[in-house]
Amino acid sequence: MPTATPVKVLSLIPPMTQLNTPYPSTAYLTGFLRARGIAAVQADLALALVLRLLSGKGLAALREAALAQPEAERSGPVNFFLDHYPRYAQTIERVIAFLQGRDSTLAHRIAARGFLPEGPRFVALDAYDDEETGDPLGWAFGALGHSDRARHLATLYLNDLADVIQGAADPRFEFVRYAESLAAAQASFEPLAQALAAPPNLVDQTLAELTLATVAEHRPQLVLLSVPFPGSVYGALRIAQTIKRHHPEIRIGLGGGFVNTELRELTEPRLFDFVDFVTLDAGERPVLALVEHVAGQRSRERLVRCFMRDAERVKFVNWPEPDIPFEDVGTPTWDGLPIHDYLSLLDMLNPMHRLWSDGRWNKLTVAHGCYWKKCSFCDVSLDYIGRYETAAASTLVDRIERIVAETGQTGFHFVDEAAPPKVLKALAEELLRRNVQISWWGNIRFEKTFTPELSELLAESGCIALSGGLEVASDRLLDLMKKGVTVEQVARVTRGMADAGILVHAYLMYGFPTQTLQDTVDALEYVRQLFENGCIHSGFFHRFVCTVHSPVGLNPEDYGVQLVPLPEVTFAKNDIGFIDPTPMPQGVDHDVLGRGLKKAIYNFMHGVGLEQDVREWFALPRGVCPKPTVPRHKIAKALA
Ligand code: SF4
Image (tube, rainbow, N blue to C red; front, side, top):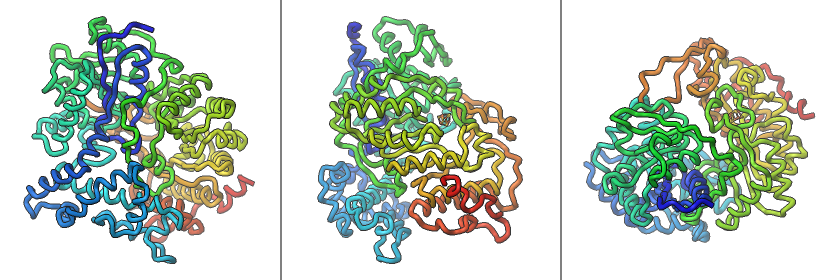
């Protein structure tokens, strides 16, 4: 093993990403650096921020901020909070303990209603009204979901408080993203620069205190800020600003998913008022080079995939060195993260999304990149998709065993974009051979390699849920997107999974280039039949977004669309507008159709409206919506 360098590295999760489990990037980097003999520690400032704001003291400070507002400017949630403040102050610490799984019996009092102050977010409960029982939540959870019901109510209570933070302290605050619009696809740094120059509000001040306390605890020479999404960039730069102000000697690196996708053409020197280095793609090699640089063992010219400021200009340095193979990246470690303090929120009643926000899952990748890397809407030209590498099943199960030993928790979320069936099969066999008991879920392609036998094997090894893209359920469009599957094949594959006891979730898309109204109606008919035939249990429709790194963005003419030119980019570049000349009836567009699709899927997930004509979900004038061209029993026949 190489000798330890004197550099101590602190990796930070900035606000906000998710609250039920740590975002995995710092766990990966910390595990990797430690395996190389480098002193590495980590902290989750997103969780710390929320726990501080949602504490007795935090709510008292929030009340002060609310009272300082002119009465006429207070929002509904703020007024409700002020009117019921004593009840919030009495309940907040108990509710947090309950959502952390430290006080499960409180479920009875919460579920009985009357314990929690019920602010504006609770009004939404009426939407679930169960006509038979008169119980507003009975429809959603059935008779058995006592604890779930309490967690859902406690989550609504926290959402009310998030609205109060928005109304009284910072309108950009949300639990899973923070000030997202300042960074997402922002060609210019100006909005962020202005926001960062503004006087700190209650959230900023709290984050600054937590930052200084964390730096004082660990005394690092190098801080790494990992920004997976645009909704964590502002928080990261506020952290960097605090560190620069109080500890200018500490070097700061910025990396992560947002950087890898959106900052590839960075030319904005002002970003380097906050951070010293911005690294692209898989972090291991660039971070090793940074550690050596900070230790005085490597010049700036020999950094790897790294932006920096040089004479007021941004320069990109990429000393050619091979990436660390996936086999050698080591085992992530959660050491140093408060794994028992995360909050199991129950926000959405979508069963798959629930897995995202509920429970503490160890996050692990079973391969680097995607083995398929062809889908025309996907960032296939980027390293995180395009560089496919695997590790032996024995290495993966070694990692799993080490993680279970460290965390004491056996739930795994395999965070691959599309876990390869071959690797999953080998992994399942190895788990069974070693008798390692875990529960796991992840994302795959619904390809025919997933036979009913393989699904059985996966379920036996602990697989509880699988998600995959069915995108637009239309063979013409699946072909155009190079998805490599057909609707009937997806039906057979998903039914095999469902029969094996695996929860199946389909990612669905609308608004793909050349998608017509008829395509949308037919796709919904297919989706209806997939639910009706027990192939899928859950689904989510999202609007197609064209990115500059995807085949559609790179070769729009192949997809019959024209790109809308972007303004001059000095900061973030990712999403790009396009013009699709495909005709639609007057008054109909993908936004209108999207509302119908979302309503339909929400109902299908609860077994409602499956017998109904799918045209009824689209609020279109009579005669505008065409009949589905898909025969009503097409999927049943395909399965037979
Ligand atoms: S969409 Fe999924 S399956 Fe398709 S290339 Fe991207 S990661 Fe791979």
